[in-house]
Image (cartoon, rainbow, N blue to C red):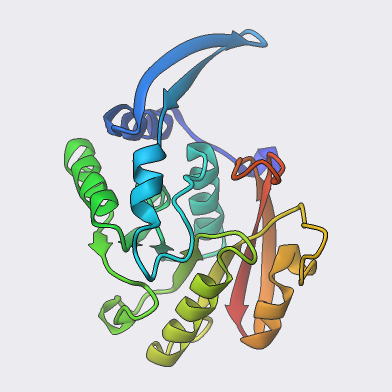
Length: 241
């Protein structure tokens, strides 16, 4: 995302800090001066939540949180593309939905793990930001309950690891919702394993072709997933043609 399109004011930044301050994943923060600017660095441990996130039969991708400023960048990009509502699938601690709500979008946060949903509800209560956490399996969730707004679905899970989740959710949404320009954000990758099946469209080319989606935009944001992923993640914004 170009720096000039990534604008966050002091109030919005304070809301991101508030999310991290009340989030029990983070146990400490330090302030460091980098290039003459004070930066707050939050430290924490997500191991217990990671373990919980993989205990469900329908949990197709473990909990790895998007960096908070990257979550804000995703919400801002969705808003700039004209969307009115962001639906975060496999939402973890709800940070993308939270950022969507604080940027002026309607938000829905769908997560299958009850402990993570309890965490989201606690964060929502403490911050006063209602981003609508729902404990549900997004692959069978009744999306007819979603308000008929211009919505974009953000699906967690990098290529191959998150393929079952992404394709199941896309299939479910397209079967239930009769909306024009239904849109999805797919979490891509710049790095590909030696025997990766798909290296097109940041690893999602086959899925995009299968569901006859069109790529609207791809933005690259700093986020660290696993040891074989670089410190930047491409997010592929697609829509049903």
